[in-house]
Image (cartoon, rainbow, N blue to C red; front, side):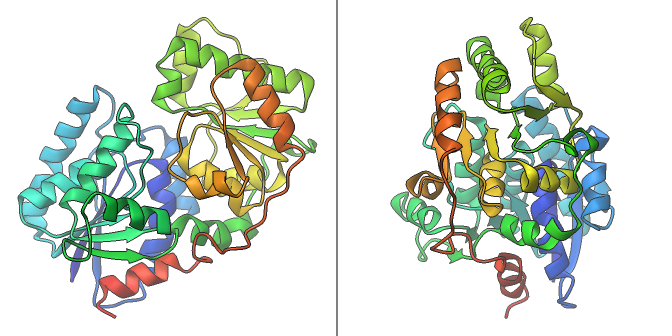
Length: 354
């Protein structure tokens, strides 16, 4: 079977790193990888391929920048041509980015079956581009690999059942990756002599593109840095531009975007995580670190239910209070929420027909 895999952004490289490794153990599957180029900075893209020991993509599209519609349209056109040229038996996509949607639409319109890893996740916020991407991708996919029971339930509630598509609860491939690479993680120099620090990430459009929300998050991180513990913030290129444009000042410890092994090192050593990322919420949990998520909703509702994660509005005082409460909490995984690090093998076995 020829499998065409489409990736384009950091979380997808992390997931594909373990899934492609599992796929490689099945000689019946010939995987061809397309990298759309959605993350174009070498620190956001190339370094992940080298650190995760992934082969170079077979196709590199170099598509980044522009509006959501422009980016998705250019990707769709290029992926369509690749599908026509390579004639895959199936297309595989990850997550909820513009690359995900472009790959799924291109394949569906050419009657190539689509498998979606991380299917069924919902924030129930249709203002998020990611929510639109994941809903549409699920609708055109015939195989849906769900990480959690909640994801399966979301699909069923939308009328997507086993009569419509093949739905499999596999667990989360990000736990596979965290387990596999944690032993070779690297602590960046900036954190080498720090203990009890707060690791922060900030990149989601709902925060960075809204000046009021962005100002609230920046003020909150600065306040945590002053009053509770040092804050380390690897700054996404787009976030850096948004902060400069808004005339804001970060008084925390900033650094350039880090590779996956460095991010794991920071997660292992930090005391608390503050983020607006979907993936980092789970990565914090994998390393048993309390998390504060500066968003109105989360796809990972089970983490909120067990108290491992706290949703927090982008307001200085609220962020400070949430971090204080998080510092008093402990994180446990009593229910094996994300599959115990076996998701990639389950996915590869299914694709190979086992």
